[in-house]
Image 1 (cartoon, helix red, strand yellow):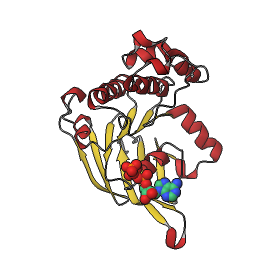
Image 2: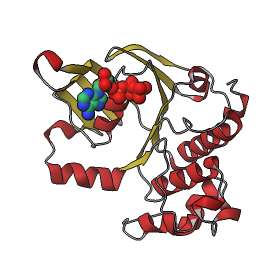
Image 3: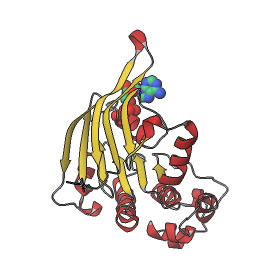
Image 4: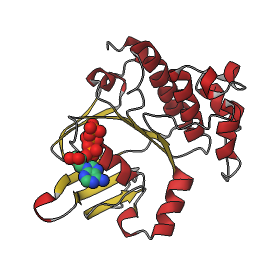
Length: 239
Ligand SMILES: Nc1ncnc2c1ncn2[C@@H]1O[C@H](COP(=O)(O)OP(=O)(O)OP(=O)(O)O)[C@@H](O)[C@H]1O
């Protein structure tokens, strides 16, 4: 019988990452087997140093594993050339980091337009900013925006190229809880509206309540991988 199961967005098999060598080697990932279906919102939890960012960087093509396999929609990233990996990042992946890295001399709209000018099929920058609830702030400079608003500009910038994948490394790490909720609501809206498979690394375990899937890391391995039967709206999350 034909295999009719849909291809996952990401699959990793026995993925390992070692930084350095000899006595000083750090085994950041120790055999990670992951299957992430298309369109899911995945929250990654785990103690500091457990390998979350290392995994996210490899999924996003910013780094490579030391051994094992990584597939994006069935395509082997572990076999990709540097050029192919660059093209993969540019065309398919949006990144959001803890610090927003906006250009201070450009308005919110211009920061997003920087990306849309070079993407093949972008969202209009106004639309990307509206999706994260910033339609009334588009002509403000970063210094005129709160931390949460700046992070939402960074999210608009990440999604403006319509990535299939949105990878967020501690997107609320620098924010207070009320502002963090707004950023999480923007991420949920983007996940639902654009259908981008979304990974969020956080140290706040209660953020897991908004996820389709929760993956808990420990010492370079997946300790727990569970699906939520129901998802909470970020504003219902207790911080
Ligand atoms: N470029 C690097 N060179 C050497 N070691 C590294 C490098 N990047 C990460 N590591 C090490 O790999 C391990 C996993 O790090 P990683 O950043 O993936 O963990 P994490 O779970 O994301 O941690 P945190 O929650 O603190 O961000 C850690 O021991 C870290 O010190």
